Length: 157
Ligand SMILES: [Zn+2]
Image (tube, rainbow, N blue to C red; front, side, top):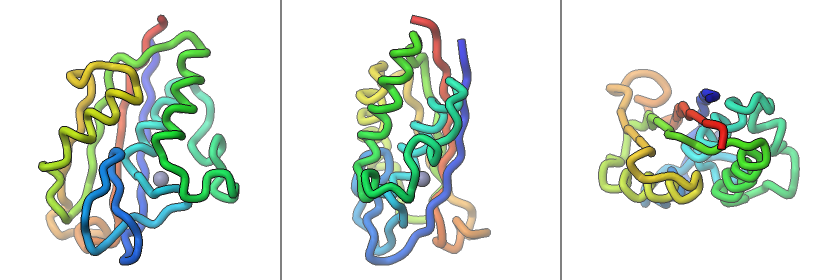
């Protein structure tokens, strides 16, 4: 078995979309990023990359590349999943946390889990997405950023 973890942070600014775990959430602030800014899918992706010791997200998908500008982050996960399968592994489970002051994510958590389960080809029971605020403290608390963390476990096929 192999374990991987990842943390990501994106600035929040008006005029950007807020996409978390493949779910577009209506809000006056959005996540700034070279891709679609999906902070959660980035840690999903990078925890897989970490489990396989392949470097980091920026190494595989450079933010200087036109190819990845505005790209749907689901496509990045699918590309990494191909690598996971090519190396003879499958995902056992994943546990993620989203740190965001506003808006409330509870109405969207189930759809995020559905999206991630589909991408990782696992049961929804094996996908955990938790959401928490920062109690109005720090960059998350001041609504300046979204932070996500993921831990994933892989097993040999
Ligand atoms: Zn990111």
